[in-house]
Amino acid sequence: MAVGWAFIFRQPWLLGRESSWRGSLFGAHSIDHPTSHKCFSGEDVPHVSAPFHAPSIATPDLHYDLDAQLIAGNHGAPKPGALDPGEKYQLALAVLHFGEQQDSASLGHRLDDQDTRHHWEARKVSGKERFIDGDIFDRDDALAARKVNHAVDQQERKTMREDALDIVDVQRSLGRRGGFGCGLSNVCHSVSRQPKRRKMKSEDYTVPRAPSTLPEKVCMPKKALKTVPNESHSEIAKRLAYFQEHKDEMVQTIRQLVETESPSDNKEAVDELGALIAGRFEALGGHAKFHRVANFGDHLQVDFAGARAGKPVLLLGHLDTVYPMGTLATMPCRVADGRLWGPGAFDMKSGIALMLHAIEALRVWHEDTLPRPVTILLVSDEEVGSETSRRITESLAKKSAAVLVLEPSHGPKGAVKTARKGIGEYVLKVTGKAAHSGLDFEKGQSAILELARQIIAISKLIDLKRGLTLNVGTVQGGTRVNVIPAEASAVLDVRVARKQDATGIDRKLRSLKPVNRKCKLEISGGINRPPMERTPTVVALYEKAAEIAKQLGWKLEEAAVGGGSDGNFTAGLGIPTLDGLGGVGEGAHATHESILISELPRRAALLAELIASI
Image (cartoon, rainbow, N blue to C red):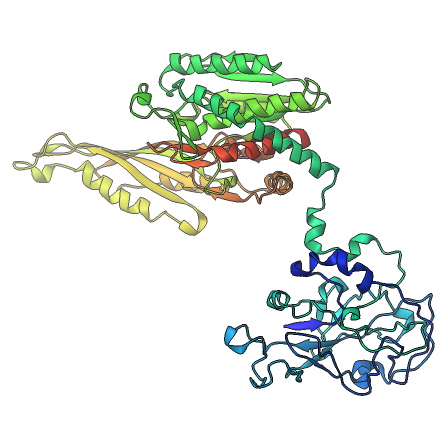
């Protein structure tokens, strides 16, 4: 590991001592004495024509040997001259290679080439010397001592660091052992005005701070710059704290929604849930209306005006679940182990609760209004194909600036979804000819046999590299075991990652030909959800969300998934769409369906900030 003796400290183990060192390490010195023939001179600086030692260093014991000619390198011989106090100079610093340093306790804080009989004796470090390049003695290109740009490995000519903050890269183990804690003596173009030469003091080994108008952040670690609080960070932290304070209320809302069962095929139950949610949104100032449907629950739309004009943001979700009525009897809603469990908790009643509480918070923060118009659409048939709601969804999406889908997030880290596969369903029906399997076997034409051949042909259309899959999910055929089957059928699930693949697979399926010419094929169905592709508009929306999440203190990941949602419709229209903004959990459509309660505050904060910033 290379160590540059600039000592503008960056290491975390040094930061705690910054205040106590500031006066001694960065004291200003006048710079008005001429340099020596070796280009380093002054009362505070050892003459470098001969080696010098720093015996007070505990670990590792070092021997310094600065060679002025080597330092000058390609720039030619160093030229002596008076240093102008108004100028700022780069600093030529030796860099030692500590590649041989060991961290084993058996070495007793020594380097591996040190003699164990000389534990505390200053010895020469075996290692290669490296030098920082740059116009070292050229005043026209000099910089302040605390900012040395474009440090270069003199032998390999590769940029090592971008600024002096990074020159020092001392191992943490040295800090724990007090390796450099005692300090070293000044080495720079700085000269004391006092005429009397003093002995080197280990506490004074610094790079004096040259006068400079550089902004203070130049001397701050890069990591610190990322975490420096400002007004916006402070405000977003307060908003996250707001949701932390209201976490229990969010849990109660989710419990209320889960305990109001809403299977897709039970219109009365879905309508009851819709009425409950409509009342909650209207209490927040929204205007609710229902799109009436005969065979499914009514679709709920809620509109909120905003403080500024413009297109609304569409919050999209669904009321229905896959669980039949009465599931709560065997799968009750409960809170345990930091989770809320129950049918539909993850998919997607927690998402509806996040909508409610994000809208409520925005009104609190913006004087009983929203910063921009918002439309909410909760459909009743998403789990069964969205046949009656698709037209409504697409119509509202076309009027919106963006679509935020509150379907469940992906995985334990709560990734949002920037790509989804398109979904299709096809039915392949084969018609053959019935016959007695014993008396007239040769007169029969088996529909099941033909269907089996077609299934093999269909399997050859799968292209995993392109994300194209076909699954024969169900097969039916035949009447009796002693009858050659006259009819057979199969239902196919088709998934495509690209829009053009949807057209291609549809064409290929409809072009299937019977192997047995005496059988007839009939195919119906099609792609009912286009793929949600990771387009530039989707990426831009994700990046905005990721930046908000970063300010909230976590990294928001993205995912491409095989399942579909109503976000497929809106993304297929080219509307910026971000999916998976709902709860974080697991077990969708399963008996262990649950959400993580601890994730609710930052999911709500993310949603609220997205609504306000789009």
